[in-house]
Image (cartoon, rainbow, N blue to C red; front, side, top):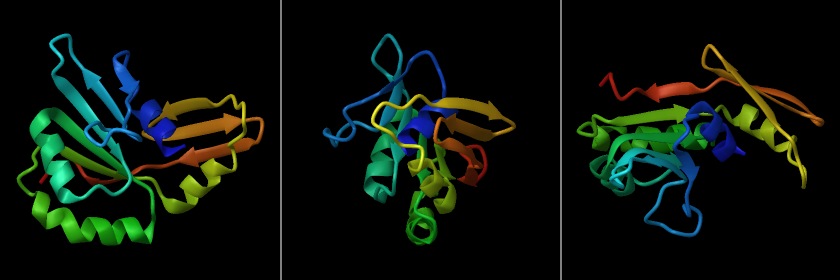
Length: 143
């Protein structure tokens, strides 16, 4: 479900899901141009710093969406200093309680509606509605 939220938040006509779950050389989402250059690399979870640095070297922009609450904070605090040279990195946290609420919307054949306004994602289905308020832990423009 966090992959779906990341897809909605990064909406672009060239954004695609990759083999990220089964191929460790690919992210969860990406945008490539016609020359096969990677414009945007999106990771979901808590990748190690080597993977993030590799992504930053291969792509114009890298965004990591983490969603584990306190566990994600511990992960980020542990690697943030190792990523100071990664100028094209952005780290966004989906609050754990909001991510948990997303899972309540899951159905075998679900129809989700996502509206994004002022940086918040409003996700609704027949099962209910969830508001996602991403927290930017690191913006690629600020160091």
